[in-house]
Image 1 (tube, rainbow, N blue to C red):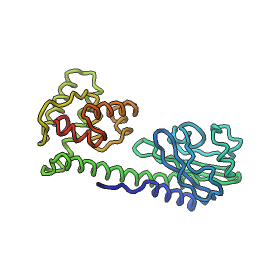
Image 2 (cartoon, rainbow, N blue to C red):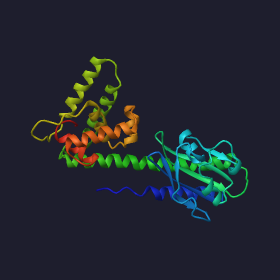
Image 3 (cartoon, rainbow, N blue to C red):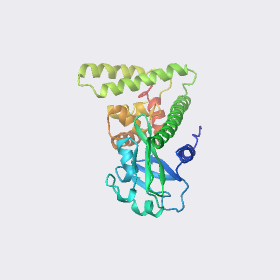
Image 4 (cartoon, rainbow, N blue to C red):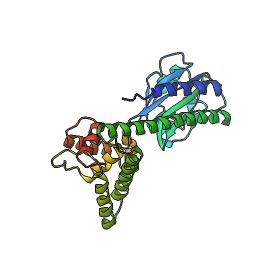
Length: 281
């Protein structure tokens, strides 16, 4: 079992960096989960008004930044016409007037937002925005490294659970990445012959596994296998959706269906069960 460091610690450090380097009295931010931004890290605040606030996509400055994936700012929050005012009560309770926000974007996905703010009307120049963007890029880089470490460790766990650890780990990873790539390519093809050829190649790759249960494998649909092949590489639902050009909710539905057919309760167990039955390499 490999425990990932708390991402909240990384966000907390980024908030502190923004407050110090951008020379603003207030800095805050948090992570995005299921389409909402959770403000969990706050420095320089005087009230608890912003603590644990949930910011929806497109709502307020933060929601706008989440949607556009670009930094944003308002010099006078109360009178700003470029944003919605869904969160006037907590923002004005803290006395915030000038505020800027920058997204934390990892592989095209917004994972969080960091804010810098002042209680009076102050100029928000390029230097401040550049400082915030630098901090969020550094944070995004750290999260990307953590994601990659998680992906490789999860792959290692799956290999170990599937009792194929005696095989070359590099070869295993290459086979599984190739399998996932083939399935992703095949699901978007209009050429039936080429799609069938790729699916046959996927079956050959899947049968390279040394350990399989006796009996008929579960009737997993092609899309369920597409999703499981990406999950097997350690991809999140959002990453899987992006790779397969699906909606995240659709990915969740396919994953739930596969788990039900495999009679398991977690995504990791689904991958292991599919491998043991020869559906995945």
